[in-house]
Structures are given as structure tokens and as C-alpha cells.
Length: 524
Image (cartoon, rainbow, N blue to C red; front, side):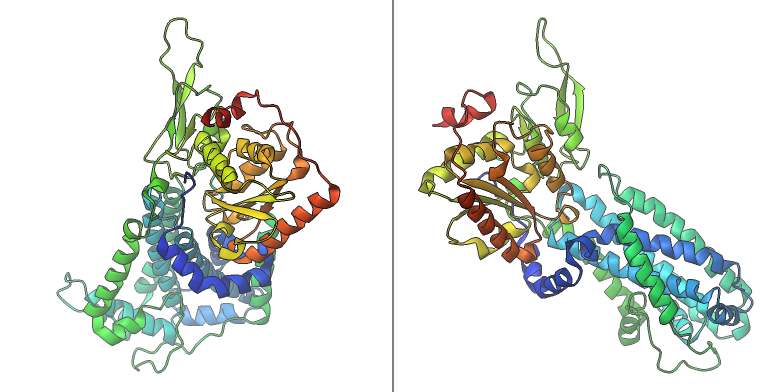
């Protein structure tokens, strides 16, 4: 099959494990407000709130009296809510980052050219943990004391110290203004490094989205504000270096590593964290698609390329460039031709559907290969009266067995919906299907970022390679539906078939002389 694109086996296993949680979130938030579909941009938005809420607090923080100044801020009517937002947004940002990692694993978006983004993302997460730990220590309550001492114990695991770093806490007077001034400096300087890492993280993505839609920003911003006003985080007792801290309530997002240090000591805790980081960094080499075909870069048939630049414009990863063509004397070919950078191409196949003459795409998944497969698929059983062809993305609803043997529907799993060439839609209607429904992932949850958007524009808004005007749009239906709600997709497909039957839409005889539709005649 030309559309063999499948998620990695581990992605499918993780999907089954998390399916109850994903369904619950889908029912609670719906597609529009589901935070898991926009976890990356939500993390950046929440970090923006952390910065905006934290800057005013700096002016009231005193390195000579850290706990007292923090307590004054927490009791001030004008600043308490800012501190609460600063704290809650920090935890929410880490939660969004964790879920962003999960979404990448669920979609198999780790291997090949995405290694760079994955590894830089691990570095971003580690740096975010360090910034959070520094911020928690600045409060200098009993949690901060425990966190600071555990941090020093962890650093002891590095074989570079002749004396124990924890000795700084042996004398309470040694932990003075210089110590907290250094922490303030790190808490301000490290976020600047974070900014450069974010830019590096998204540098291979075309039209990178770094901010959520306005409605989502307002919705979650208001939720954080209400939480900050009506349930402010409590301030623990002040740190006392002359006493061992008793039971301490730890921040689960930034102090998760402390039990490892307590259990295994400095060397064991450091070894465990190093092993965890190494395991996460190695993910691109063992969490990858099973079918090697899905990781092959697109190629360009230069004899067919017209230099229209559409594949260059549509590529979500800036993997296609237009270069000057070597012209023979008297040649009528285009002056420029598309070229694919295999180091950037993730084999999404979106360029396939953007090429009218079908001259670009991954090996075995070009528009011509799609048409041949559609022809074979149609010929295997023929079309029954009123039968609807359903093409569903394997990265979403196409993975579900819920389509099997449903009366009135003929199902085929495809690659990303944005890679389905519009000539396939036309062919299926001409071959005998009463209607064609393409089920894509929600736009914000597309494994290849922009597939549903380009599909919509090609079918309804004449974006090349557009669905031809001779095709009756009443017989074509697009549906964006997450994989956890395949039942809805099945119901919509059945309703679409019933609607076509009720309207008595007769098959339309389409002309066959168009160049884009000659391929199946040649194949037969």
C-alpha cells in the first residue's frame, strides 16, 4: 500500500493506556478548548505570564530578608494575587510541557529530522526545572531550606568538589545577601537562555505558532486569575538552619527528584537523573515508525515540475526550496524547480497533495501512487448503491477498528489528510462511490501541523492542487475529529450517507480527458 504511514508501535500502546484520560479531557473541554491539543503554545503563554507577574515582585523582594519580604508580598492586597499567578502559572507551564512531551510521543513525532526539536525540548525542560527550583528557594521557607540542602547534596555527586558544598549551610550567617543575590541573578538570567532555546527548538518549523489563540489565552488566563484570588498558595514556616526541617510539602513539578536523593544519596540520585535524561534524549532512535517507508524524504520529478512554488509554500517544515533549473537551449520548462532537503523532510506527504501534475512526494506515496491504490481498492469489491468512501488519517481516527464492516461505508486508512491528493476524491466519485468523506485530525492536533488546513483550502477554496470545479461538492465532506472520538466520526459518515440517499444525488459523469485524471486509464 502506498499509504503505509503508521504510528510507532510504542505510540499506539501509549494511546491505549491514555485513552480513558484523553476521552475524559475531550468530554470536559471539547476540541476548541482542549489544552492538550495546544500544550506547546500554552506552555509558552504560561511562561509569559510567569515573567509578567514576576517582574513587579522583584522590586519588593529583599535579599537581606527573603522570607519576610515574601510574606509581606503574600499579605499585600495589591501583590498577593500576582504572587499567586506567578506560582500557579509556573506549575501549569511545567504541566503543559509534560503533556507536550506526551503528545509528541503519542504522535510519533520524535525521529528523523525531528530529533533536533526533541533533544532541544529535553534541554528546555531541564532548564525550566532549574529555574523553578531557584525560584522556590528564593522564598526561603522550610520547603526552600529542604530544597536547597537537597540541591547541594545532589551537586555533591559530581566528582569536582574537594569539600562538601553543603558546608555553606553549616553557618546561618553564611547564607546571607550574596547567596540570595546570586539566586536572583540566576532566576532572571536563565529565562533569557530559555528564550534562545525556544527559538532553536522551533527553528525548523515553518510558520511556527508561539502563542495560543486569543480566546484560549483569555479562558486560561481568567481561570488562573480566579484560582489566584480565591485559593492563594499558602506560605510555609520560615527556614531555620539551626533545626532540621520536619515533614515538608514538596512541589511535585520541580522537586520530583528530591526523594531520589533522599533514597539513594547524592551519587545515586545524580546517576538516576542522568539515566533518565539520557533515556529521554535517546528516544528518537528507538521510538520511531515501524515502516521504513514512512521516514523516506520526498523527491521531485523535475520533468513534471512546473515551478509553481505551491509545494514550497505548503511544506510545514521549510524542507522544500525553489532553485534555478539548468535549461537546455530552446527548453520550455520552468525557470525554477523544487528541491527537497532530506535533512529537513519528515515525510509527511503534504507536498504530494499540493502538486497538480503529481511530481513530488515521498517514495511510494505520490499522487500517482495514491491513484493506483484507489483504483485497486475500488476494483476489489466494486461499489454498492449509496456506499460512501471514508478516508481517515492513520494518525487519528484511521487507527481505530471501529470502522470495520459498517453498512454503507467503505473505509481506507491514509496518511495525513493533508497528503490526500484531490484527484483521488474525484476518481472515487467517478468509480461509483456515492460520496467521499475525509476524516482528519483537529487542526491543532495534526501530527504534521497543517494537514487539515491545506485540505480544506484545496477542496473548498481553490488552493492548488484544488478539487476541480466539475466535482459536486455536495458529495464531498470533510470532518476534523480526534482519534478518541471515532464513534462521532462513524455517526457523521453514516449521516452523510443517509443525507445523500435522501437527496437522491445521482452519480455524475465526469470527463476523462483532463491530464490529472488520465493516470488510472493508463494503469488499467
